[in-house]
Amino acid sequence: MTAGSPDYRALSLWLDGLDEPLTPRSPLDGDQAADVAIVGAGFTGLWTAYYLSRADPTLRIVVLESEIAGFGASGRNGGWCSDLFPASSAKIARSAGHDAAVRMRRTMRGTIDEVERAISGFDTDCAFERGGTVALARSAVQWQRAQEEAASVAEWGDTEADLRLLDAAETAEIIGATDVLGATYTPHCAAIDPGRLVRGLARAVEAGGVRIFEQTHVDSITRGAAVTARGTVRAEVVIRATEAYTAALPGARRELAPVYSLITATEPLTEEQLSAVGLAGRATFTDYRHLISYGQRTADGRLVFGGRGAPYHFGSRTHPEFDSDPRVFDALQHTLVQMFPVLEGVRFTHTWGGPLGVPRDWHASVGFDRESGFGWAGGYVGDGVATTNLAGRTLADLITGVESDLTSLPWVGHRSRRWEPEPLRWLGVNAGLRVMTVADRAEDRTGRSSWAARSFGRLLGQ
Image 1 (cartoon, one colour):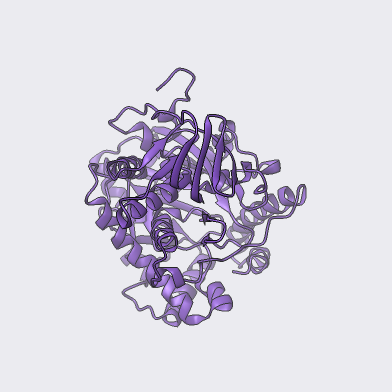
Image 2: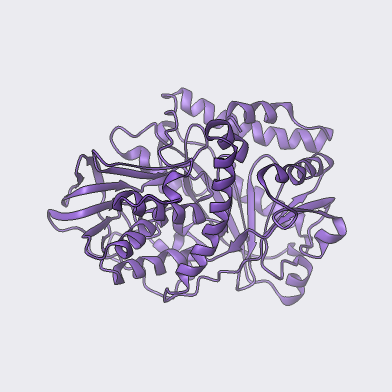
């Protein structure tokens, strides 16, 4: 780590646990010429570079990163490599048709296989384990939502092999949570250590001849150029892979709203505690509340648990001080201990957070305009570990001119409407977070489904 650099290990459990120094790579030093310039060394930018360099090893590819590879959500997320896509199948079907929605769903599942295949060649063990996901129903209202989801999967060509309903006894065989009425289970998720994945991916990209310049902040993206204070990279193709930090670029402030998600992690648990918790196959876990939460059992026997609840900050600002919110951390830890009473008295060793990119319609997108040479991908709303791999493969095909099954998927070329100007954006995003929080409390109190949450879902077009 160079003088004046932040403590990158403090950004997450994953980065803290790396057995490599987090010394930044050299920054850009003067103007450069390239065939492809990629702005952002997170999963999107690195997967794009990875597949491009393999599709055409002669390409001169440059990746520009303002901090270090994995600084953003790629190094701080909850470690779910899943088939989740932020826009629902029903929403995709309304705009692109039923068959397109089914293709998108199946391609996301195939992407988990592709991630596993790719990382088998990396010089790192990112603790990839396909244990699936168990989504708990811990109230009558949640149990109703679980049943409704299980009943709807046939519409998209799925069977019980893709999502099945579990009763309380079946759920207890997987996870030892309290107050469980039942659950759904899908095998389409793998728990991973995202820090090891993103750092291993960066090394694989460099081994393929790609140049990565770190601590190089891109001030603007113009036609055929990425402009920095350290020099300009001129390239026929420029890819914006900045996700939650997109709003800092000129002209892009209303493209994606940076909304914070926060996470906490326990110390490694004892064998007795792990036996009570369950999750022996490392299934990831969540529940059917409106306010999203997500958890996993790590390879070294910790529980990692995260969720929304932190506020959106006026003007789409991001700042290191926003990564921490004691109120949210306390709520997450309280929820986890309430879910697993055996954790009472267990030490929480890590708390962290960071922004994720949210488009106005909650619909991720990828695209490339050949005439201008500009490409982009993002808007994952927290479902980016697998989706970024699909984005990288898709951008590689679009840039090299390959017509493939990927380039005809319904998210290709999708344009979300821009967010409202301030203060409407601040009011709207925070009102939405508040609605979901209040809805969960009201459902716990009344036992009835929240009309407010349903109305907000319709507002988003889910």
